[in-house]
Length: 296
Image (cartoon, rainbow, N blue to C red):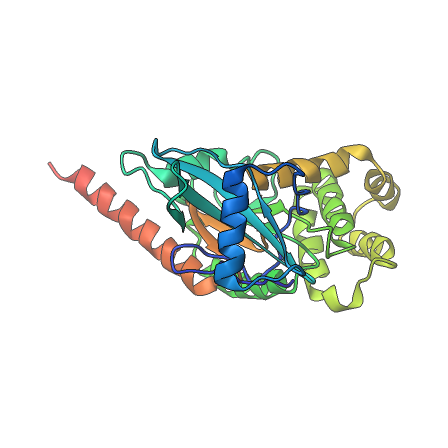
């Protein structure tokens, strides 16, 4: 998946993968502020007419003096997006994240994760929750899959959830694979993980033309009932479950795959090192809290 990375900075992580949402159509009647922002960005980054910029209408942000907008960019096959803040007088523009230190953003993020009926492995009492939004056709997701195979067995204190985020604009067989995984899960939750491995391990051999056949083959190898599996593949219910997962991802402002949340901490890309660092931090923090509570 391609990314333009035009907006990449130290405070804003722009994924190395293309963003999931389709670019929204530019309004024919931009406000003067939108025009000013676009003109400034084109000037700073030397964007010619071949680069499409969509400046969403600035709206009130969490800070009274600032408005917030999303800037979306398309250049050839590359896509990028950035959240930007602009002062209400139109003088200052900056990009990044704003943190309200009176709140716990990690808890707020975790609360937005809809984990009901999401495939999972690990103890329900695990102190660390790792949630991955991924796409079975995404090559970087495959890299992370291989890394997690080695990493997660070392941490029995982790419960791992998988959430679908197929990026259909550039991955033509991703949603069919996601639906197949959902059908396997509905028939036998443990069988989901067999298809999960099969799609990633066989990624280079799968295409839009053969994904249905491959999915049925994987289901057979997993011991699933073939007739029931095929019926599920064609059902609107299974596709709706995938759409619900994508909607949940957008609520969390997930724009690329893989995106992982470790007790609410976001990790973008195949970055097992950061995932492990977050796991270790959470385990050490839980241990310290328990030790403090045990003191007389």
